[in-house]
Length: 167
Image 1 (spheres, rainbow, N blue to C red):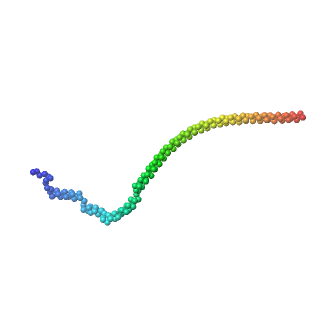
Image 2: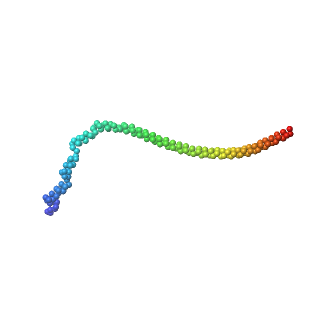
Image 3: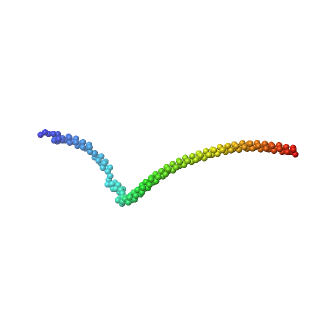
């Protein structure tokens, strides 16, 4: 029978080496004591537990939360608001359409107004031209009338002088 290495017994030296390796990998006694010192004591744990809410406090807080009934009521309100919003959107579309129609009407009315205004202005231009002609004619007639009046006055003075001489 062949003896393999696995069948051989470990020597004392080999066992010591394995022991040293294992001890090196393990936490030292000081490190262990420091870690244990960091752990909470029974008293500290009791104090921390005392800070936690009691069953009654939790019940009071839970009672403040919304119930299924409250949530259903809220859902109905949300649903109604959704319907209202949908109706408002429809109304807004109608208003936009009506506004568009109104704008078109205003454009047409403005165009008609502009055309009428142009005709009125053209008529006023004609009338003002006629007024200028009448003023010019009146000025000429006034000039002629004054000349005739001066001549008549001059004739009247001569006739009066002649009548005085013949009388």
